[in-house]
Length: 92
Image 1 (tube, rainbow, N blue to C red):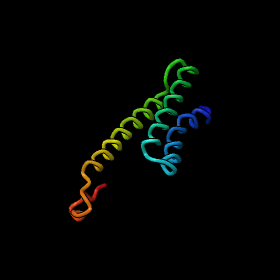
Image 2: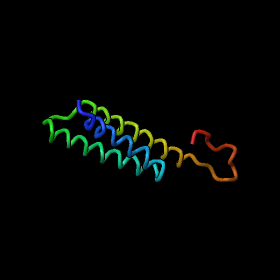
Image 3: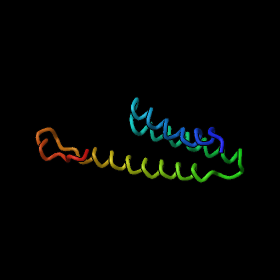
Image 4: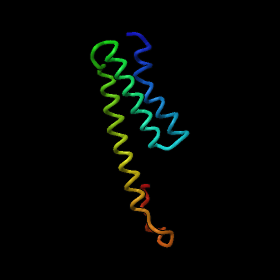
């Protein structure tokens, strides 16, 4: 296997790590999804079928992106006013 295939398949995860440190998590997930889609399109163009690693990578990005988005929404909805700060949820 050529090393460029591994680099192309790992590019969405690398982009997520970089963009997450520079911008919001939502933007990082969107960029990772876009790059995973491009990697899958490249695999479809090159091989005629998607690579297993690309499918797993895309599935994990969708799964953990949805989980992270749900966690962010839950934290925003559960925030208390500043007067009751001790009762604020600690998992946010």
